[in-house]
Amino acid sequence: MTERFAVGSSPHIHAPLDTQKIMAWVLASLLPAGAAGVWFLGGSSLAVIATCVTVCVGSEFLWQRLAGQRVTVSDLSAAVTGLLLAYNLPPTIPLWMAACGSVFAIVLVKQFFGGLGGNIVNPALAARAMMLISWPVAMTTWTVQGVSGATPLAFLKGMGAAAAVSQATSAATQATSPSVLQSFWNIFIGNVGGCIGETSAAALLLGGAVLIWRGIISWRIPVVYIATVAVLSLAFGRAGGPLYEVLVGGLMLGAFFMATDYTTSPMTARGQFVFAAGCGLLTALIRTFGSYPEGVSYSILIMNLTVPLIDRLTVPRILGEARR
Image (cartoon, rainbow, N blue to C red; front, side, top):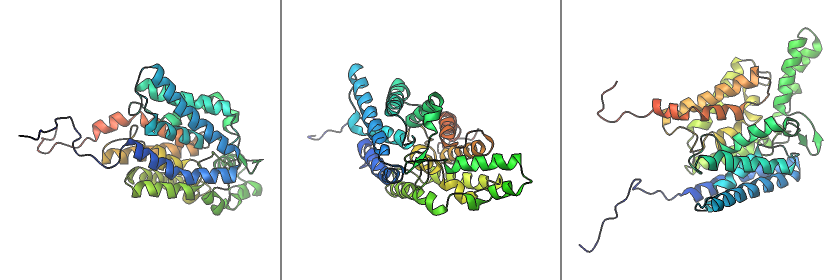
């Protein structure tokens, strides 16, 4: 025989997409949200984005060189982490804080656990949680066109507190009316206060639709996550209503771009349904009953830790195997 078979481990069927191409599609799908953030929140947003992406890529390069590992920054995963971290930060965050968060995400959360595919939680969200604990004032200062103000979720939380203190007064009754909330058009296009990449629901829906169309992510996690939050917000009697609840805050960003992370989400279809429902439940509980107005980041981080158990409990039964 002149031809020889190539012997190797699975997978034996190769898809046209590799890690670099997948990450490139994710970066491209995130561009509309970044453009909306820069347009509505100001040029400082661009500086934060550039800092996070540059420091994340540089941190991964330096770590791998110093550790004697193969440099893999060309797979674009570090750039995706940097962009997602920037999208979870306010435009007024000091750049040195953004740089510290970027180093934390890449070195402590990603590389310490073995690099791409080894981390147990989403690096960008873990860095955001660390920064929120370390610099709470800087992380909760919001501006729109240079004017400081509350985010829609923070305003909603304040309305609930005001209503609890004085439900009998007409002022409190007026405060709990959705008519005083930001208009649906503003929250849909992104003309509201918030983190750089989370304000424009329209841009995030566009990017998420592209990822689903290209087969980069499955519809299961984002659809179930968003639907769970909508149903529970209605059940809990949130002032803005289900549509308002799903459009504001980081829900769209988290559902399409963070909860769907390959490494930190379940592999099975049933597991993805369970994971997404858990994220939605925790988000609704934190938003409604917690002291913090937003719950997406912590919900996804908590559910990331349950992924090994979910995968174990939802693994498909081998054909012909007897049920236990």
